[in-house]
Length: 319
Image (cartoon, rainbow, N blue to C red; front, side):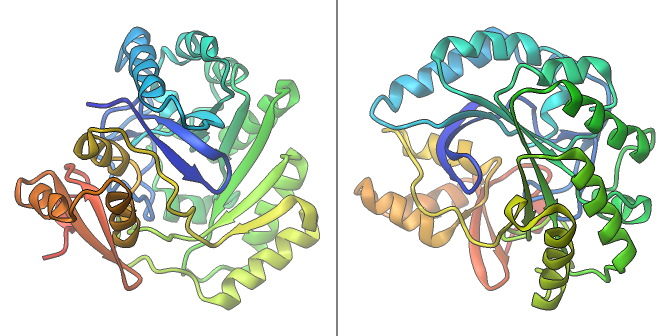
């Protein structure tokens, strides 16, 4: 499989070259909104998946193919939890040779471990998922591994902050559920104590793993945004309510690139059409990939998406 993919436009990171360092779908959570689908291998055991040399080679080859593309970050963003990779620190050290800032998007679940905190100190940017500091909502939304303890995770996040010199951001997903005010305040108070550079609020703009998950009502978004802004500060809170755009980068191997991107990042139909149009390639290639069992078609919030056919998503394909 292609470990490195993109460049992908990111609302937080600019132009990001993705690094998918975890096989589908090893994760410590099984989030109801996950765009990659349900977790197949729920685990908190760190282990080696790909060799650091293979990851370096994949990134090097991708950078060489996209020699004219601007890359703002090399980003560990997997179709599982990237900190499950026990070789993370060595991989980052090797990738520093490219002279490009390195980021990681993590669900935070293993940050209670000292070795994970040590590994993340090597990154230029760390993005922590903090969907809730409330035990009940955390379990409802993130569906964590049975051995995980929320208080230990939150303590680990704060301990990491004490020693980290890079850019720290957080992301909180807002769903269409009945949020009581106290858990919202509790989460905002935790983030205030953490003092990240930016707290992002997000909504499920791509097909979630569970079909009953819907985008939140505007009054829910407004309520949470107001509480976060009051407690944390307006300048520290930002709502991510839009798609990143269409500025994806592909090489001459369009089919391979689409599969690599959509294994982590479901793509809207209009984005794929524009991408293919720029490359003077017919949309027939998408129909061919569906017929060959490589891609699936998904629908969410009235929009059509395409994604690589993987076990965690297969049953959710549109007919």
